[in-house]
Amino acid sequence: MKFLRDLLLITAMLLAGLNVYAADKITIMVGGMEKQIYLPAKLAEQLGYLKETGLEIELLSEPAGVNAETEMLSGAAQGVVGFYDHTIDLQARGKMVQSVVQFSQAPGEVILVSKAAAGQIKSPADFKGKTLGVTGLGSSTNFLTQYLAAKAGVKNSEFTTLPVGAGSTFIAAMSQGKIDAGMTTEPTISRLVTTGAASILVDMRTVKETEAALGGTYPAACLYMPNAWVAAHKDEVQKIVTAFVKTLKYISTHSAKEIAEKLPADYYASNKQMYIDALESSKQMFTADGVMPANGPATVLKVLNGFDKAVQGKTINLANTFTTEFVKAAK
Image (spheres, rainbow, N blue to C red):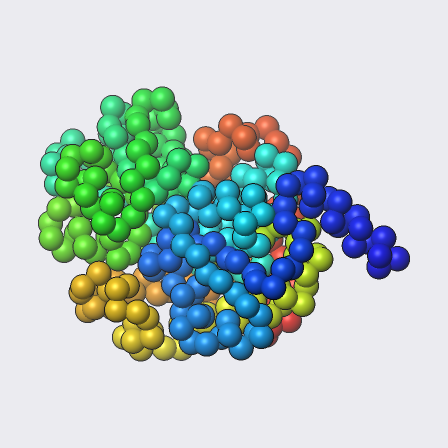
């Protein structure tokens, strides 16, 4: 029976174009390793928790979550540290992936308006005719930008989205006037706001602010993997999830300063105190235990239904987009 079950799993994965073997190394793609929203990934490595699993785990960084997703779907990676909303979008496109540990319950994103465009953009209703920066086309920043525009009555065809990444590339795009506004994360937010180069239009760094902007809790950063790979490699997944749950507990029980001390110096963008301050103000976006917020998936589906043609009209089984099996076992 076990042989037949494994054969069926492997067949399903081959049909989906996914890597079926555990391999000696497990690769996890991160949609921008230096972003604070994905802090648990690098921190788990720095604390030695990933090494404690006994698995050879490689973390690789991509500038946008959609790029990381593509790597996983091609079989080059077994998992992605990215936004939960991709699991719903992918299911609508016939690809079954699931969040196995939920890092955050808020996006940790804001829409910044450049100093030059501040007089023209007072709300998402003013996006019409403007160029808005996102990390990548098809990324979660793109999803949320499109939703906020649609909610304000602005059609996707009435504004332009430009993929500009995060960090220095986002800053350069804004300073050079290539974008009027854009969605990004810490520490990019603080780097622009503290210099007066940009101001915050929509803030989604805390649960309360996210509920105001999106109408509910919005589970965001997580580790998601192909459902079939998870089913065929439960031991490996359990070890990885346990390491991340330990990391989330560390975040919830330590100060931003203590956490920052564990990270490489280049994460501070040459201003360590700014990084600490930004983390201190938004640290509550992380879950303490890796569990999916009860009403979160429904909010994400509502958001995607607001603009995503791939999702609209489709029947989405939210139960297949996440699992709490491994986080409960980790506890």
